[in-house]
Length: 444
Ligand code: MG
Image (tube, rainbow, N blue to C red; front, side):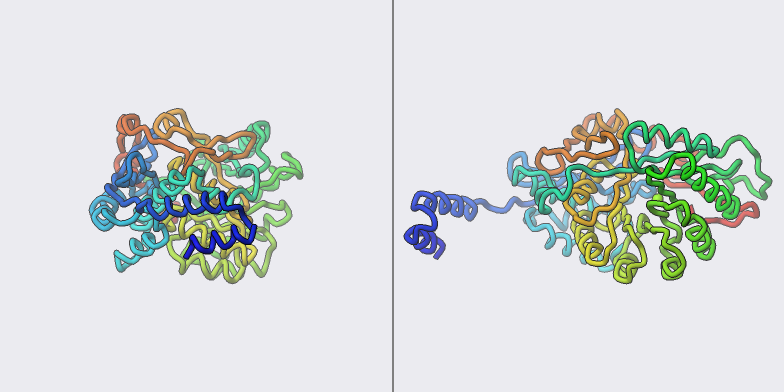
C-alpha cells in the first residue's frame, strides 16, 4: 500500500520518482530493523566524593548498543542495588528496549505496591537508560527526542552559604563574579545544625548529644539574611532560600509573608510533604513564590499542588519520581497550570541524572531554573562527558543520548563507604538525627 501511494504521489509530481524510490528504501530498512532486546541489566555503585551514586547500565542484544540511567537515592543507596538486580533484571531480560513508556508502566505496576523511593529510583535507572539507548540509536541527544531546544542553555543557581551573614554575602559575590544571576543563600545559626551552612564554635545548652536546631532561632536569622542580601547584593540578583521543611506549618506561613519585601525568586520547601494542605494558606496570604517537591514520590503529592496552582516551581528529584518518562508528563501538566520546573540537582544526583534534568530544562517551555553542581574532578573521572557549567549556564552535550560514558574501572576505585566519615559511614551513607534543645526529633 505504501509503495503504491508513494508512486501515485510521484505521478502527481508532488515528489520525483527518484525521491519516492529513496523514501521506499528508508521505509524498507526501518521495517527490516528488529527492535533491540534487553540482554542484561547491571548496576554501577560508586562514591567518587563520598556521596553514594547508583547508575543502571542496560545492555541490548545489538552490538555496542547500551545506555545509562540515574537511580541515585543516596541515603538508602544500598537498597536500590538489589531492587534492580533481583527484581527488574529478570523482569526485563528479553523485552524490547525501544518501548519506553510501555516498559515504564510494566515496571511500575509489577511491584503492586508502588510510589516508594527505592522502587521509583530503580525504575528511573532503567527508564533513563532506555532514553539513552534511543538517543544513541537515533544519533541524537535526548533533548532532541523531546522536541528540541526551547532555549540556548540552562540558567542555574549556585549555593552561597556561611556561618554568618557577611560570609554568605562574600560567598554570593563569588557566584555573581562567576556569572551567576541566581544565588541560593543559607546562613548558619551559632552552635546549631542549620541546613546548608556552617555552625561556628558556639556551644548551645541542650539535653542530648545530637546536633541541635531550634526553628525560632533559624527564622529570625533567615529573615535578617534575606534582608541583608537584598540590600547588599542589589536589586538585580535573584535570591533563593531553602527552608528544608524544618519549621511548623504556621511558622512557614509567617516566614513567607515576612520575606515578601525582599522579592525572592523562590522560597523552597517551606512545608514537608505531610503538610501540603497548608500551601493553600500560604497562597492566600503572600505573593512570595514557592518551590516544592524535592521529597515527592507520588502523583498523590504533586498532582493537587499543580492542579490548584498552589506552587510556582515543581522541584522533584527526577529519579525519585521514576525517571524522565513521568517527569516530562509532570512538566507538561505544569505548563498548563502556570507552574515552572526547578528539578533537584545537587551532588547526590549522578551526572547521568543531571544530564536528564538538562534535557528537560532545554526542551520544556515552562522551565524555571536549574540547581547546579560543580562536578569535582573525581566525578568527571568516572563520568566522562559531564554537562558543562559556564557563566551560570549548563550546556547539554551534543553527543547522542546523554553524551556520557561511565569508566567502570574508575567507578570501582571509589566503592561505597571509602570516603565517608562519622555517622555517614556508620549508617551506610544514611543521615543521622537532629533534635531540638529538649531532645525532640525534627525533620532533616
Ligand atoms: Mg532543597
